[in-house]
Length: 165
Image (tube, rainbow, N blue to C red; front, side, top):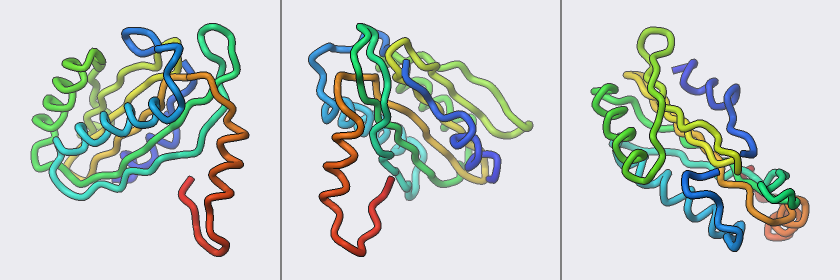
C-alpha cells in the first residue's frame, strides 16, 4: 500500500496535449470538469470508496506560449480483489476515450497504467494491487491565471475552515 500511496507524490504529472489537442477555447472550469468526469468513470471500475482530491491550480505554458493553468487531481481508492481485471477495465476505458495507456508491473504486484503527459500537460496514472488503488492526473494546460484562481479560492474559505489543496 505504501508504494501505491507514495507513487503519485513522486510521479506527479506536469504541464504538457490530449490526443485531439487542447481546445483553445476550453476554460479552466471545463478542463477540471473533464478530468473529474474521467476520474469518476475510472474510479467506478474499482468498487469501493474513493477519496478524490482536487489540487489547486498550477502555472503552466500553453502550446501556443500563453500563460496557462493546469489542475492536478489525485484519488485514493480501495484494494482490488482482482488487480489484473481492474487494470484491464481501466485500460479499456481510457483507450475508448482516446488515451491508450502503457502497462507495467512495479515491485512484483503493483500494476501501473500510464498515459504519458501530452504536450499540453494532460496525463493519467493508475496503480492497483490487493492493498489499494491510486489515480493521478492533470488537466491540459489551458489559458488562465493560477495566482488569480488561487486568490479566488482562498476568498471562498470560511475562517477556521480547512480548504483542500
